[in-house]
Amino acid sequence: MILHEARRYLQLQPNISPASTAFSKQITVVGDLHGKLDDLLTVFYKNGLPSRDNPYVFNGDFVDRGIHSIEVLLLLLSCMLVWQGAVFLNRGNHEDFNVNLRYGFLKEIMFKYTKQAAKIVQLTEELYSWLPFATLIDNKVFVVHGGVSSITDLKVIANIDRHQFVTVLQPPVHTGGYSANEWRQLVDLLWSDPRPQLGCRPNEMRGGGSFFGPDVTRAFLRRHKLDSIIRSHECKPDGFEFTHDGKVLTIFSASNYYDIGSNRGAYVKLVGPRLVPHTVMYVSTAQTRKATIQQRSGYIEHSALRELKQHIYARQTPLREEFKKHDPENTGSVSITEWCTIMENIVGLHVTWRILCPKIAHCDMMKGSVQYETTFEEYSLTNNFAQNGPSFLESLYKNKDSLETIFRIMDKDGSGLISMEEFKDACDLLSQHANTPMSADQAEELARSIDINKDGFIDFNEFLEAFRLVDKRPPSSALGNADDESSRCCNGIKPSDEADET
Image 1 (cartoon, rainbow, N blue to C red):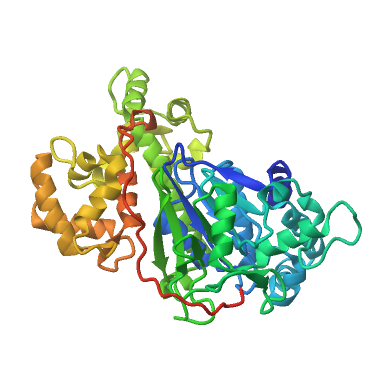
Image 2 (image 1 turned 90 degrees about the horizontal axis):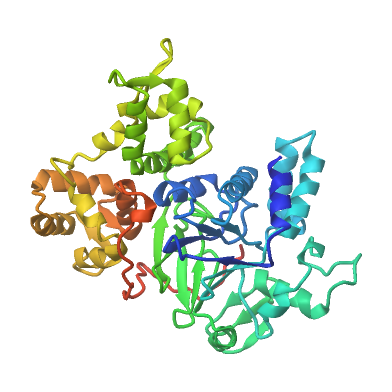
């Protein structure tokens, strides 16, 4: 079902997907995952599930090498279908069964789906051919799996009949509806690598694509009026690397790719009207690797519920008014049916409210009633600093569009990370201006709650996540539209000119 629906959806998409941050003000790009479900779950845990205000671009190589390639692929396709227009999938060089034959995905399908394997292989192979080649973000950032070459022309690429390229390793043999130039351009998009040397030459190491230099990058960006290129395709020690004077960013999201401790994974969040890149590094922990399927599903369910409860709490006033209309005797309860109807009408989301009800509010299944005030209880309990008015975080949230500036002010040493001491100092200063006194213990507790990965520091992504959780206003009431003037935040870069085959 997922493969069929995904194929139908992808057939309607252009060769180069247009992505906009006009509403979300940010977008996240994830690189190679290579069947590493732990890393995908880590990204969702740290960065949140996709949504209209949290869009994603997944930049190819979803499968091969890892043991959960089918799970990664199906999860990404499901996200694409559920959050249409907020999840973009680019084709990578491993979305090709000629490559899968060598690197494990085909064997995984045969092992896991013995009887249906042939049909799944056929459907997946056809689905590959409908995946877009690239994503263009705000007509500024070109996201592609491999790279570009001296002949890359986006007008040519936009008009290619991509479905005929079931494999990119060799030109189609049963159709004449393509030119040699088109095929070469596709190979360059999926297989190329940047190099510090000037010029463009064949990529002998991979046997396909090109090595392109900084002059080729500059010419491509100038010709198409773009700012930068984000690509994947190469494993990097820190999961990312800037090259070509910062105009090319490599993002690789599969941590421990070769062996435990061999490399970190990373993703990049592009923030503000200037699409300023903020890289986030991680390593899947032993706890995550040992988690059962049920536990992993629980991580995703927890993140989804958190997003849902945010929508609910943003509409608490009209919800309370409607609950009280159905509770004339002021008992504090309504029937489960009434609760579900009210939630669907006011929140505006068509989900299985009856199934979700026990996970959101206190239900008495015997009486068939719901204590409706408990619908909002978790947010009241989560925010321990809401005392007699707006909390410290909510006071900051009024300046949501300036969060990056606030982050940089807190980050005194400019490391890209806020230490516990830096956070407590900032809390002491800001709480005075916000007229919301906060003790040192409260500041430390708040800092530790924001530090999601418990490494003793708050990165920019964790900082943003804290404000997502305390957003108590409907999206339409968001204040301000501050222009982001800050410079790129890039930490721990370890340049490497040696390519790794991925």
